[in-house]
Image (cartoon, rainbow, N blue to C red; front, side, top):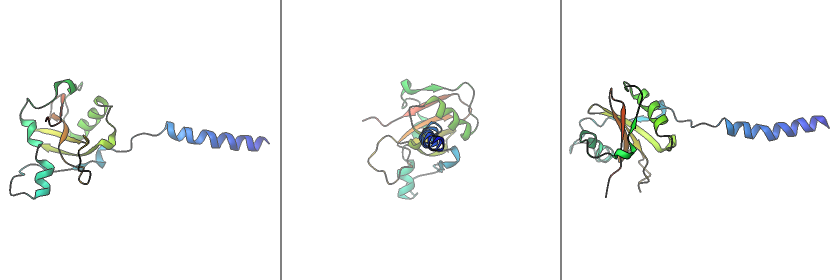
Length: 144
């Protein structure tokens, strides 16, 4: 009888232990790196659509100031940017980020903002970005 009790206890505790240990499994290495430097009208249509808004990082008026977050030290690598971004924007699940790029002195991470095209998730329509060596993350979503 005691054997059955222990088996039942193990069966009940194991799933809850596994749920408690569940973490987002996406790491920086899982993110796809995209090269958006030099994309122009001669680039493939896919590359143009993927990178078409990435140049907004060069204009400091396009981000949402209310979504700005400050890191406690300068970000000097894309992996460091990813780790800081995950701490500063915990409301986004890791599965909402698909790719990243280094463009014009910024690390830029794509963010799923509920667009209609789910086939090509890796596009820089909505993004969180930071200047290389900077401490302030900015958030961009197209305004209509």
